[in-house]
View 1: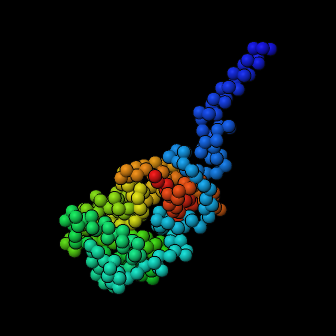
View 2: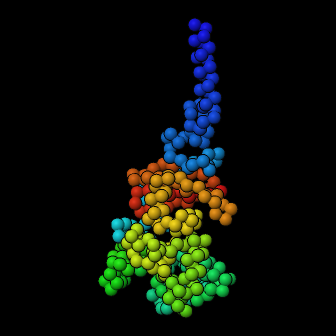
View 3: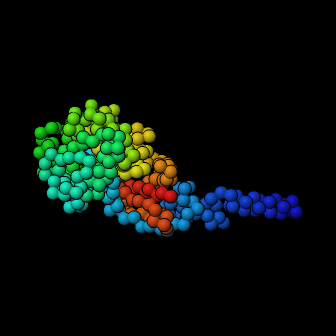
Length: 292
């Protein structure tokens, strides 16, 4: 009887010790314990103060990581048309590049991001950028699709130009695949949150032929991860959905990228300090990018 009692006491002590050492075991009130009830960020934030955030399903269709292609149209209610302005009429936004006419439209935010990138290029002696197209409305895209066909254009409502996060960039000196501007962007654009959206070796994935002029803003650290792993946007979003959480460091800043399914809405834990960004994927998920 005494031996049995001793065994029970030893077992209880072992269980208590495991609860202290392994996150999520009953009796441990660590930052991981609430993961049983509320989806959370990963280990980078295990010791951080967090709060519960209710993410509605509408967030799936908002943000810089939206996938727009033949299968995923631009979400209804996109603010791109309201945000886009004629660069010809907002000359203060034209810095480090030129535009051919008054029809080129970008949001001021995207124009500022592109100008920051061209300033870095100018420091390297690369200065002959021209932006030939930015935001397009559905009527303009429909005309382009009819002229070029589905190998070089998307139907109206399925083009990233309708989303307002892409721009066609050229050089005043040569075709982009040969121009110094094209070579510089291909090497450095990821550092500024931009990606070459339709690479030469990804046509089967994107459904679009190689376009050395078409760049898309996704933001850091996403552009850095895509550059490192050689992902097209489609592949990157699949990767995040499969991995659920991915950690990386860019320019000394640590990031944790977490994927959550958000159909019907979802509650998740986020840093109380507010150092995170949300973006939907235009499919079924929401990506939380936390940083410290």
